[in-house]
Amino acid sequence: MVMMKDNGEEFPKKLQLYSFSTSPPSFSVRIALNLKGLDYEYKAVNLFKGEQHRPEFLKINPIGFIPALMDGDMVLADSFAIILYLEEKYPQHPLLPCDLAKRAINYQAANFVCSSIQPLIRLPILKYIGDNVGLEEKVPWVHKHVGKGFTALEKLLKDHAGKYATGDEIFLADVLLAPYIVGYLQRYNFDMSEYPLLSRLAEAYKQVPAIQDAMPEKQPDFPIN
Amino acid sequence: MTTSSGQEESKKLQLYSYYRSSCSFRVRIALNLKGLDYEYKAVNLLKGEQHSPEFVKVNPIGYVPALVDGDILVSDSFAIVMYLEEKYPQHPLLPRDLEKRAINYQAANIVSASIQPLQNLDVLKYIEEKVGPDAKIPWVQKHIGKGFAALEKLLQNHAGKYATGDDVFLADVFLAPQIHGSIHRFNLDMKPFPLLSRLHEAYMQLPAFQDALPENQPDFPAT
Image (cartoon, rainbow over all chains, first blue to last red; front, side, top):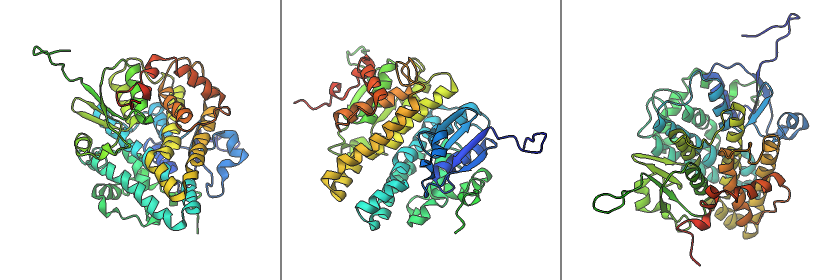
C-alpha cells in the first residue's frame, strides 16, 4: 500500500534497504522482507563502483557495509543481524520454528553460509587472490570453500529437510542459503551434482514468490549488460 | 554427581574444543557466564584431530567447537551460543530492547563473518604457501583492522562498561576472544582502537572470561 501526501507525493517508506542486486547477502534480506510482507524502499549501492565508500552512504551507515537496513532512526548492517532484527520486530511469517533443536539447525545452516562460505568468496577477497596468487586461482578457491560449506550443509540437513531445508516451511536456513544455489554460482561453473539435497532445494526455492521477487534480475539496479 | 557404584555420572553437556580456537573460546565464555558445568573434550586442530574417525563419529560435519547436550549436537559457535541462550535462560546474553539486541547481533557477526574466517588456520596456510610467508601478517592485520574499525564506530554510542551497556552480552562473548587473540597471536597494535582496548581490560577482570582463556584449558600445551 502506498501512502500519499495531500500534494500527491508518496510518504517515505519506513523501511529502506541499501542493497546491491547481485550480492547474495542483499538477496537474503530481500527474501526475508518479502516473506514477512514488508514494504521497503530500494536504495541501490553499486559495489563494483565502490559506492559503499562514498560520503553519502557513509553518512547513513558509517561502517560502509551492504546490505544495510534503515528502520526509522535505526541503521543496521550485516545480513544475519538484519534478518534476526526483522524476525524479532515483525513476527509475521516466523523465520524460526518453535522447537529448540530445529532452531539450532537453522542457526547452524545460516551461519555455515554467513561465516564459512560468504566471507571467503566476497569480491574483495577474490580480487586479492586474483592479484596475488593468479587469476586462474579464483575459481578453484571458490569451488574449495563453497564445496566445504555445501558438504557440511548436506550432512547437517539430511535428517531434517522436508520440502525446504529444515522441514516443510521456509525458515532462516532457506533465507540464507537460497541466494547461493538459485544461480549465483553458475558464474564459477560450480557443479551442483555432488549436492543432491541442495540441488533439490534450489528447484523448490525457484517456485517461491518471495524468492522470485527478490532475484537479482528483478531489482532496479540489475546490470542490463 | 556420583552413582551408587562411585563413578561420576557423565556431565550432560560436552564441549569439543581447542584451547586456542577463538570460536571455542566464545562458547566457553557463554557456558561460564550461564554457570553451566560441562565436560571438556579436546580436539587438536593443528594436528587435524577434527578429521579423526572418533570425532567424525560424534560430529560428522567435523567442525569445532561442537556441543553435545544429551541427544542434541550443535556445531558452530554462534548456533551453540544461541542454543544455550534459548535453552538455559539464566544470565541472558541478549538484552530485552530490540535495537540493543540488533547491535549485539551486528557486533557478533562483524567478528564471526568479517574477521575470524579470514584468520582461520586453512586460510592462513594458503596465504603463506601461495602468496608468501611475509604476506600472512599483513593479511591478518588488514582484516582485523577493518573489522575493529567498524566495531569502534558501531559501538561508540552504545558501549558502557561493556560493549553494549553495563552488562555482558553476546557482543562481548564474541569480542573478547577476538581482541585477546589479535593481541596475543597477531601482535596487533591496539592504539587505533581505544574502545576495544578498554573493553579488553574489562573482560580480563571477569572470572567467566578468565576461566575460558586458552591458557586455562586442559589442552593448553605444558611447557
